[in-house]
Structure formats: structure tokens, C-alpha cells
Image (tube, rainbow, N blue to C red; front, side, top):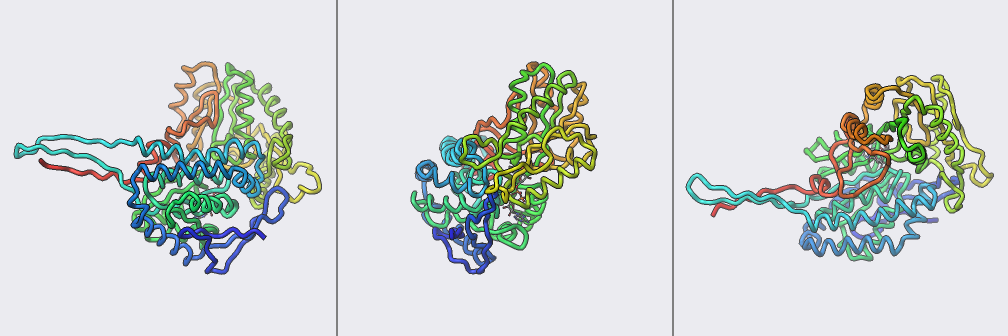
Length: 486
Ligand code: NAD
């Protein structure tokens, strides 16, 4: 049976805690492998190795040499593309066309883009006259923050992990990664890549396990961790921020959302329907930026609901490698139970179920998988649980609106503030609304279109801080000011 081990100080570590847990694939519930759960001793060893690496060769590397290593990491991920692809698919069940176009290439690109960023990053300098008639020059340098704890979710495992590991290493830090218990494989595989490329031991470490009373909590509360970067649920972010408060460790938080799409009657209808189809159903609705609330201007409401229904009903579930497959399973049976409980809740709250609402008929060999139907509701008040709470499944509620003010009020009536998308041909209106909706990311006539140099992050309870391009440097480095009197 496949063993998925912790990666500590350049080695796939034997398990001191003796604890293992099973990873099953959501495709058919068969076993992917057994995962070694890290206890406090493994987390201690990983954090200590990461500190030793900072004080060793890694800490003395020039920026150019670091950049060469990170370019090598990206190349090696691409070289082992199929290994990463198969590992990601086994853990998540996502279709090959998605993982091969999004997860794995972006996983590699994250190392290249931040290697480029750090090469070209500049800092400020000021000259001034001193009171005694001399001169002084201040200049700033960026120094690594130290050992960074990287705690990751399961929805885009390699992509979201390297989104943090890439800049952390580019800035000269070392990392201890805690992948999601649902998706341990690609982070582990990356350990092999680090060794192959010659990244010094202790620079990249992986500890497996769960959150509370397991590797996640042991790592984030570890006193020798110098900063914590986290992507996941808002509730978990709250616990992690509390852990970071002890010892005044900075946190960067990318959290949940309940994102709205605003569709105006003057939109390019086909673009709006196709893009909202992606934003609701891609990755089986398990994208933090995904749309769960759709607001459609009344004149095109019926037409839009029917068009999205047709798209949802055309999303064929199936094996990841079947070219006909349009949608994969949810990540786990546990997550499916949560999503199905919202499907039930919608019915209890009086929703009109436009389509879906249950489990699809699957062939016998897939019946143990975590499949759910793409689902659309209408007719609920804005106070309904499925309109307010993040579900993280392939589903949305569609609401008609009449005026700009009304739709802005509804879009903003949420504790979250991650992303929105606006569909209209009137760019004046689009730009006017973009600044009125309280989010970190706003797309106009598009969705999930990313320029990796730009700031990424959420407002309100969707996060703290921005990562991406030079913005990542704010978290992964300390800006030190040096004043020279001459
Ligand atoms: P989660 O919060 O349940 O888990 C994320 C990670 O935190 C896992 O590795 C988990 O083991 C760990 N963890 C859990 N409790 C912990 C604790 N007390 N201390 C330390 N670590 C702990 O999230 P998830 O279910 O894996 O992912 C889905 C969530 O992530 C959704 O809410 C989604 O919106 C959010 N998300 C946000 C973004 C973003 O960029 N804003 C991106 C992707 C996903």
C-alpha cells in the first residue's frame, strides 16, 4: 500500500507518533494510501530543521542562486507533470482537463513568477541633511521573516500551497507545510522534487495531520514559527489568528466567501451564462472565488435561469480520465454530507429547486464516490441559510433585481468579502459598481482570470492581507531600514 510520509530535513521521516490515517479517493472511495500523522515531535523536528536551514547554506545563498533553484523546482514539476497530475486526481477526483490546465501548471508557475518578482523587487531610499550640517542616507532592505508555517486547504492543493511556498522561499524563508488531511499527496511529492533539484535540506518540510490537537494546531502554536500563512475556512482562520497572537506572530489569511455575480440585462448573454456556469460549477463548486449567489436583472431573469439550468443539466459526472466528464465528485464523503444537508435545508426553507438537489445516478463502480448533482434554486429570501452561508458545492441561488442600488445592497449583505463578478456592456456602470461592492477581487465580464503580479485577498471576514506579485513581499519579508550618516 502507498505510504504518504512526513518530509522533514530532506528525508521522508519514519513516524514517531505511530499514528496513521487513511486517504480514500472521492471517485469511488478506494484507498489512495495511508498517511503518517505528525505529532508534536515531528512538528518540532520540522521547525528545528527549518531554523537550521536558515542558519546554514540556504541562508547564505545569493538571490540569484535562490532564483535558479526555484526555476529548477518549476522545471522539475513540469518534468514530473504526470506524477503530480495522477496524485492530485487521486486525492480530489477532479477531471483531468481541469487539473492539467489549472492545478499542475499553476503549481509550477508559482515558483517562476515569484523567482522573477524577487529578482526585480526594489526598496526605497531617502537622503537628508542632519542638524549638525552633515548628510544621511536611509535605505531599506528586505530580509526573510524566518520559518513560515503554511497551512493549506484541499480544493486546489498544489496550486494554493505553492502560491505560498513559492514567495516564501523566493524571499529566503524556510517553510513547514501542513497540507489538508484530504489532499496529502502533491505536497509530499514536492519533497522529492526539492531533493532532486538540490534545495538544501530543511528548507521545505511537510507535516501531515488534522487541525485541532494534531499537526495543524501543533504547528501554528509552535513558538519558533515566525509567521503563519493560511488558506481555508473563516472559522479556522479565527483559531489560527488566536494561535498567532501568542508571540505576536504575523498571519496572512485567505478565507471563505459567499460570492455574488451581478448580471445586467445589457450583458453579452452568452459570455455571462458561460462564465457563471464556470464560476458556479467548476471544480464541483469547490473554489473559494466561486459564485453561490447570482443576481439577475429582471427582464432577463427567466431566460438566464433556463440557460443556466440547461448548462447544469449538461454537466456529466464521471471518471476524471473520461473526456466526456464535465464535473468531478466533492472531495470527501464528509463534505458531501455537508453539501447535501444544505440541499435539504433549501427545500425546508421553501426554495424552488430549478435543477438537481440530490445525488446523481452513477454506474455501479462509482456509486461509493462523493457525487452530488449540480443544483440551482430560486425563490428564497435573502435571509435563507443557503443564501447566507458558504456551502462550497456546485450550487447557487438566483435572485432577480430591479435597480443598481438594490443589487449592491444585496451583494454587500454578507460578512464575507472575497470576490464578485459583474456582467454588463456598460463599462461605466461596471466600474462604478466595482468600487461599491466590498470585496478584494472584482471581475468584469470574466471570472478567475488572474495576473499573478496583482494583489489577491479578501475583505471583511474573507481574509487579512494580500498576496501576489510584490504584495507577497509584505508578508514574507521584514522591511529593515538602515540609516548611514556621512
Ligand atoms: P479548513 O479551514 O477546514 O482547513 C484548512 C486547513 O486548516 C487544513 O489543512 C486543516 O487541517 C487545517 N486546520 C483546521 N483546523 C485547524 C486549527 N485549529 N489549527 C490549525 N490548522 C487547522 O478549510 P478546507 O475545508 O480545507 O477548505 C475550504 C475552505 O477554504 C473554504 O472556506 C474556502 O472558501 C476556503 N478557501 C479560501 C481561499 C482564499 O483564497 N480565500 C482559497 C481556497 C479555499
